[in-house]
Amino acid sequence: MYVDPTRNNRVTKLDFGNARSEMNTNEGSDHSRDVGLANSNGNSHSNGTGQTEMQELPRMTPSQLHGSLGQHGALQHSNLQGRTTSGKYSLGDFHILRTLGTGSFGRVHLVRSNHNGRFYAMKVLKKRIIVKLKQVEHTNDERRMLSLVAHPFIIRMWGTFQDAEQIFMIMDYIEGGELFSLLRKSQRFPNPVAKFYAAEVCLALEYLHSKDIIYRDLKPENVLLDKNGHIKLTDFGFAKYVPDVTYTLCGTPDYIAPEVVSTKPYNKSVDWWSFGILIYEMLAGYTPFYDSNTIKTYENILNAELQFPSFFHEDVKDLLGKLIQRDLSKRLGNLQNDSEDVKNHPWFSEVVWEKLLCRNIETPYEPPIQPGQGDTSQFDRYPEEDVSYGGEGRDQYHDLFKEF
Ligand SMILES: Nc1ncnc2c1ncn2[C@@H]1O[C@H](COP(=O)(O)OP(=O)(O)OP(=O)(O)O)[C@@H](O)[C@H]1O
Image (cartoon, rainbow, N blue to C red; front, top):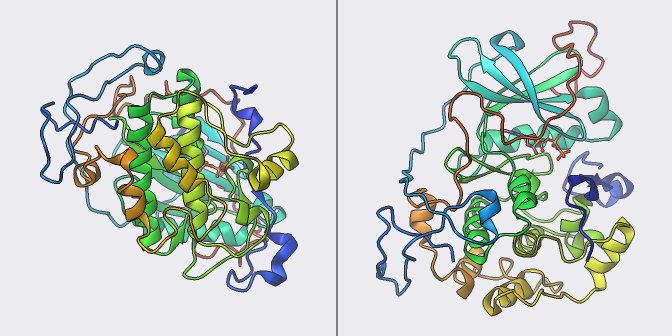
């Protein structure tokens, strides 16, 4: 299968909810990717639950990730901090540096606080484009969902503000870059490495679902790596509080679940499908239903047989068959025991979930960065625009983004 190694083969985001607004009963005006989970001293021992902690997790450079193994002995300690409430920030509080990423509605800048000298990521979304693309509700949801969540594997938002033309979100700067970039540099990850990242993502999804939040945009572009190599889920642009079901067709084509494509009501089931696609892409280097024609991708999602490369282990094939499962009544994660079924699957048997949650384990790859210094070496370069933020003109969208 031909795989375009760049991000250009992926239509970034789609939201066709607009076409079915009348069906959209509970969304208001929403028109709309072996974990050698070694203990920190590298010893192997039984954890008392019959699971075996692997002796060492190979720590690698991107080029080593797929092939020979490197080693690194740094200890990773949990340094989770409580959530700090934010005061009201303004543009004047930050010095804008380079662009970290661009998205459908704006861009994300590296910024430095004029007060504490620390680096943050500032996501800037243009109101005019949000309105034009009918994403007002999703944008307000993004802010609301991020303000509700506090988890070691989820981005932390410190505050938001707006000017006449833009809205701004201040988040922790996650220095290690996108899992996507690491995956493309590595081509594909060895089984233990994919398992490590998958396990951390699994805990993030479990947490979101426990709060009735569905994420809806899982893909390696939205999984960032912190300075130690642990994941942070970012981009809550499609995250939504959904205690029952929703209908909006949104997500990224390769990753969209069949029930979304076929406009059936859905809930957290969609994240477990995408989780399966993420594991597949990490191990194979491509997604299972990809086609350069998006319509054909959707046809594949609905009908194509799931095929595995010959090097996939039997237990991951079993897991993926149960996640990338079109029958919602059989999909792992969507059954009576929710995420427990996923965590208890044999592919994850080495994972000591409690230690993972505490980040008290060694990561497979430590980004080569200078922590705390605004090092942007892990991010692609984007053309810089003249930024004219802070305009005080008439705000024709005044009523739409009151929470920012
Ligand atoms: N907190 C952060 N720290 C470091 N980089 C970040 C952070 N948040 C976002 N980025 C970078 O900016 C990119 C775009 O961010 P994000 O996905 O949130 O924007 P978006 O406008 O919703 O994009 P898209 O439309 O592609 O989903 C990310 O893929 C990542 O490379």
